[in-house]
Each structure stands twice: as C-alpha cells, then as structure tokens.
Amino acid sequence: MAMTITEKIIAAHSGKDEVRPGEFVFARVDLALGNDITAPMAIHEFETAGFSSIFDKEKIVLVPDHFTPAKDIKSAGSAKVLRNFAGKHQITHYYEVGRMGIEHALLPEEGLVLPGDLVVGADSHTCTYGAVGAFSTGVGSTDLAAVMATGEVWLRVPESMRFVYKGELGQWLGGKDLILYTIGQIGVDGARYRAMEFTGPVISNLSMDGRFTMCNMAIEAGGKSGVIVPDKITEEYVKERAGREYRFYTSDEDACYEETFEFDVSGLSPQVALPPLPSNSTAVEELSHIKIDQVVIGSCTNGRLSDLQEAAEILEGRKVNSAVRLIVIPATQNLYLEALRRGFLEVFVEAGGVVSTPTCGPCLGGHMGVLAEGERCLSTTNRNFTGRMGHPQSEVFLCGPAVAAASSITGRITHPAEVMQKRGRVRLVE
Amino acid sequence: MSHRVWKFGDDINTDQIIPGRYLSASRAQELAPHLMEDVDADFMQKVKPGDVIVGGKNFGCGSSREHAPLAIKGAGIACVIAPSFARIFYRNAINIGLPIFESPEAARKISQGDLLAIEPDKGIIKNETTGEEYSFQPFPQQMQEIIDAGGLINFVKAKMDRRTQSA
Figure 1 (tube, rainbow over the protein chains, first blue to last red):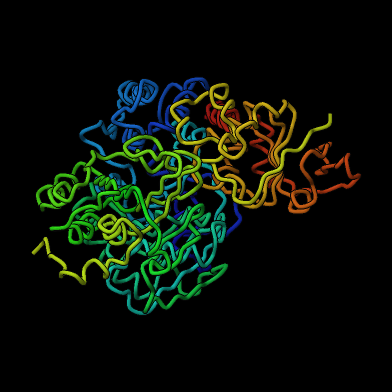
Figure 2: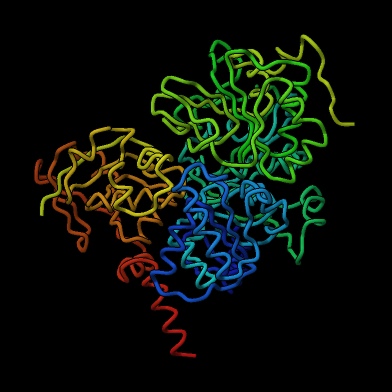
C-alpha cells in the first residue's frame, strides 16, 4: 500500500508493515521531551502512579526553558523538580541554564532528533522536528508520564495534507511568511488532527532554519505534525550532528492525501498576522500605519542564526525607534555564541536593543518582556492570542525577523525594503 | 442531575482557559481560581460545581498545557461540549478523565444558562430548558478503554501488570 512519510514512520514504530489514517496504535518513541512548565506535572503523575524507573535514560530530554533563568520562587521550584528528577534517574539529556536553549532549537542542534524518528514532547511546538523528516507531535503531561515509564505513546494515525509551494520567494521573505500565509488560507483549525506535509520547489530551496519555522507552526493550523521529506539540505544539517543511525523516509507518489493545496508564492508580500489569531495574516504594506511599543526577535519559531543575521543586517548602523523596546533572544547557547562571534549581538546592542539569554519568556507572557495594558508588540513568535504576552488588553502581531527588525527602527509595522532603500543592506558575513 | 450551561465562542485557546502567567503552578486547586479569567473576569464567582462549558469549534487550541483541562476539572465543571476540539486538549482531557463530548448540533443549539441532562452511555444530551435532545459521537473503542480505566495512567499500569504477569 502506498504511504506518506508520516504513515511509514508511525508504522515502523508500531511493529506494523502499514498503517492507515484513523487507525490507533501504540508507538515506540525515540525521544520524549518535557520542559519546566509541563514536566513537573508529568513527574508528579509518574511518582504518584508509583512508577519506579524510566524506560531509557538516553531517550528522555528535560529542558528548563520557559520561565528560566527562574523568574520567581515558584518557577525556581518547577526547574528544581526537573533537576532533581534528572539527577535521580540519571537522565543524560538534561540541559541546565547556561548550557541550554529553547527546546525546539536545541534538540535538532544537538542531533537528538533525527530523520525517521518518532518524537513526542509535552509542548505543542514539538511538531518542529518534522523539518528533519521525523514524525513529531505535542502531547500533554500525563502522556509524558506514561511515555517516561513505558517508552510508548497512543496515537491515532493522522490524515495527511499536502502543501505545494511554487514560484519565486521574494527578498525579505522566509519560512515565517510561507507558514503565516498558509495558516491564513486554511484557518487555525484547517489542519486539525492532520499531518501537514510541505513540499514543492520553494521548499527544496528553503534553508533548514526556514523549514524549522514552518513545521514549528503546524500546530497553529491545528496540525498534529508538520513534515518535510528529507533531502540534501537535511543531510547536510544532520550528518555532523547525529550520534546514531537515522533513516530517510519519503512519501510514495501515489500516497493518499486528504487535501492538496498549491500556492504560487511569486509576488507574495512579507506577512503579518493581526491579533488574536495566527490565521489573520495579511501583507505588511496593509499595516504600515500601526504603531508598536515592543519588538521581540527570538523563540522556537525564529530565534535561529539566519533569523538573527537577517535582523542584524537591517539594524546595522541604525537605531531602534525611541518609542520602541527591542528584545532579541538567540534560541540556544551555541547560537548566542555564534551570533556574538559574527558581530550580530553588537549590532543589536549598539542599535539600542536588549539581548537576552535563551528563554521562551516573553512569548507566553512569562518574563523578559511582558506587556502592559494597551501595549502592542510585533513579534517573531508563534501565537498572538488575546493576552498571550501579558495584559489581556495588550496585543501581539506576528511576523518574520526582517519585518520585526525594520519595524523596530521606524516604530510602526514596516516593510524591510522601506528601511533598506535609504541605505543598502550591510552584509555582515562573508 | 441538571447541569447549567456556560457558553463560549470559537477557537477558545488554552491561554484563555488558563493564562501563561499561572503556569508555574501545576495543581488543580491552584489553577482553578484563574479559569477563563481573561475571557470573563468573574467566571469563577459565577460558576458552580456540576456546571458545564459549551464551546465553539476547535475548543482548547494552542499550547499543550494540561493545566487547561486540569483547571476545568478543578473548578468542578462536569464536562465540555463543543463541535470540535483541538487535538492536544482532546487527548489531555481523555488522559485525565475530564468528560468531553463532540456534538456540532448541541453546541449550536444550546444557549447560555440552559439546563442539561447528559446520558454518556446512551450518547444523549437532553436540553431541559428547550426540550431538545442531541446526540454525540461515541469515542473510538481504544479511547473508551482509556476512559473506562479511569485515565491513561491507570490504563498503562494495567497494561504493564498484564505484561509482567504474562512474562
């Protein structure tokens, strides 16, 4: 039977030759993830249930990344629960502050998630790892507790949807614009329970960073997973990171898709999503009258090196608008160091921005940039729900790093070309 | 028992159910006082144990926080009815034993303040206020087994016991 990459990976992890959408399976997981918000609840469940040992100390990853470095006493307590549990069960992949990163940037960077893997994480953006050709999905804390004990998870095999991107992606556009546009086309439940498979010539030319951004936001369309069939770009990314064998799966040509969408992205404008839903995406030009109080560049969606580079190239030699606070958060320690070496961080600080240690902080209204009543933030994060970044009467607009950087200079939502026309782009890297 | 209805709109997300600022807590009794706080600041003053939430499509979208169904359960909400649920919320509710019912018809026709009688075994929701009756989809067998076991942890423990015995 013809199968999609998603069906093949699930079948291979459930001891079956084939699976069909709608079927229930208990699948073996290659990696299970928890953070300082979701893991304390999972650990409580695990211990209350009387489980004495974890299924594999190499296959559980705990990352205190949401409210760390601890923002208050309660958060410090949550992180401590992870630390103690990791110590007690000798969990190999526990990442301490100063050696960590935002989980969905960290795990691929460390080579912990590889093509062909089946990964679950108690965090909705676990769908990010589809970018390396894995099946990867978000679950809850009780799920994580059960997986930590058994190494298995219950799954309903999802239907697949195919998204084909054709044409030429314009200057200043990237993965974020593609995914915001896509969610705008299908809605926040347009891919509910389904696997979103991204393909086509535009994807073939898209960098790994752009692919991570796209798969990361599959959940914002209700998707169970996002996935990109691995290719040379994937191979280039994983080969030096992998500490174990991996497998490239492909989708059969006659595999069954519930729906196929084809988008010609030539002429597409940089996208900005208005509050309160990621599906409210529109061309940046439509919003050039909207003033902003804060800009955040970072997160599991857009805190990677090419995101920082794009922002730095726009901010080089320029100043952040006096009415704006710019907060830049490299997603991992390694990225932070690399951005430092390349001079990006100096650009941000010179421009009048703040550079933070890796944290999810402001994205979910935790810390490092919480919004007051009536404030408006333009952010490269993934959710613009009411009150997401702070006060219920604050607003979040979503965009890619180029629009975020350009807007931080003008103080209103701005097409990068508007800022760059005044003086050419500075190439910060050879 | 009659359940009083609290009605909400489409795409109610988990940030609305329990805002991010409360996520350093993880017990039901700590979370419940803040349930739906940003949608309706007085919600917890008005709601009583045994009441039900009726939402619009894609109820529980957004983050994977199990704090959301746990806060609902902690507030004594008897069940959530919606035309559709976001998937992580759905599985979290099943896993922790919060009853949820998928019924587009019920969600559309039920109004704020209606009184309901629910018969899960028969798959029927009776609207005592209007006299209407709605059906909901039964759970797939494998999910029903998790529900019958009293949640995922009990289900998994029973499964592990069976393996130990047969080994």
